[in-house]
Amino acid sequence: MSKHMKPTLQQRQQMTGLERLSLRVSAMINHPLAQTQRWVVVHRLDTDGEAEWEEVMGLLAETPELDLAFNDDDTVTLRWSRSGLGTRDDLAVEQQVGKAAPF
Image 1 (cartoon, rainbow, N blue to C red):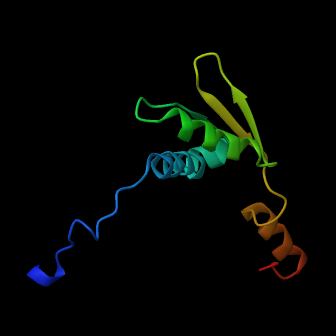
Image 2: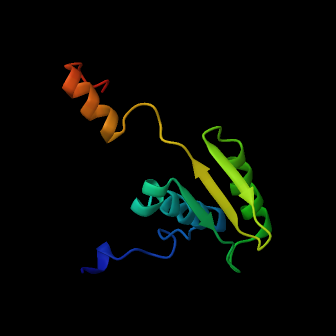
């Protein structure tokens, strides 16, 4: 790598605690197993700050499609139901009936 292409310290940006926690929870929700079972348990790590944890849990609680259960062991179980549109099963049914997909 040439000298002019190396990033400087000013160009590098550190990820905030809120961003790290948000990405971790998002990855857990989007994991194929979680998508199949439609639930996931989120554990709070030692590196998750109180303010960041409260903010992410607050945002999740405001999401109408999610049900949150705060467990005794300080974990949070997120549950959701299958959405009405856009699932593979819905697309297969629509194609069999002859309707065009909604996208």
